[in-house]
Structures are given as structure tokens and as C-alpha cells.
Image 1 (cartoon, helix red, strand yellow):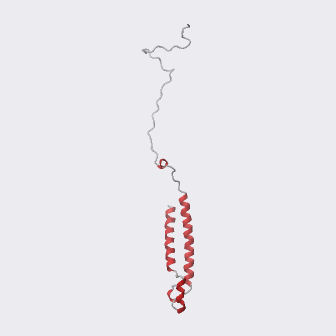
Image 2 (tube, rainbow, N blue to C red; image 1 turned 60 degrees about the vertical axis):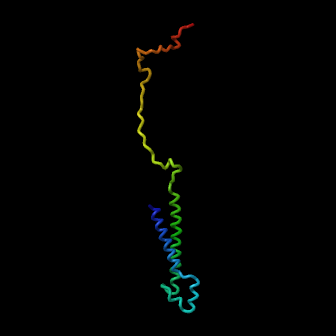
Length: 127
């Protein structure tokens, strides 16, 4: 939001500078003042226009530099993702059901088991 406001002000100041520069008279325009035709063409008098326009251009140029630096600072404050995967929205997965198995000691041995009983070292016959 702030960057948009500063950008609009920046473009407005640039347009005002262009307008002021086009309204100012160049150095070569003073050559005709020797014959009396130069003073009547100014709105602010023979000398006041140069002072007003030059000061206004200086102020606008300063504001232009300030808005340029502000836009550069605001552009560096954005945090960009370093990869495409970081920029992607996180996918939500369904929670996995927890399967609990009873401990082996609590389960009774099956009576109809076809497997032979496991012999422990204490039950092995001595040869």
C-alpha cells in the first residue's frame, strides 16, 4: 500500500518537473531582450519567473530523489521465496490413524497354532 502511494507521488513529481522545465526559458531567449521584446512574455515579470521556476524545479528534483530512494528501500524490504516450493501454498493432509498393537506378553498363545513351539536354550536337550 505504501509503495503504491509513493509510486503515484513519484510519477506526479516527474510530470511536474517536465512541465516546469518546458515552461522555463532557455539562455538563448535572452538575446531578444535587447530589443525590448523579452520582458512582456513572462507571467512573473522580467526577473521573477527565473527565480520561481528554478526554485520550484530544485524542490521538485529533491522530492524526486527522495521518492526514488524510498521506492528502492521499499523494494528491498520484500521477502521473496528462494524456491518455487516455498512460494506454493501448503497442502493439508488428513491425519494418519494411529495403529496400536498390543504388547506380545499380553497376547495369549493360540491353541490351534500349527507352528511348533519355540525352544529356549534352557529347554534344549544336552547331546
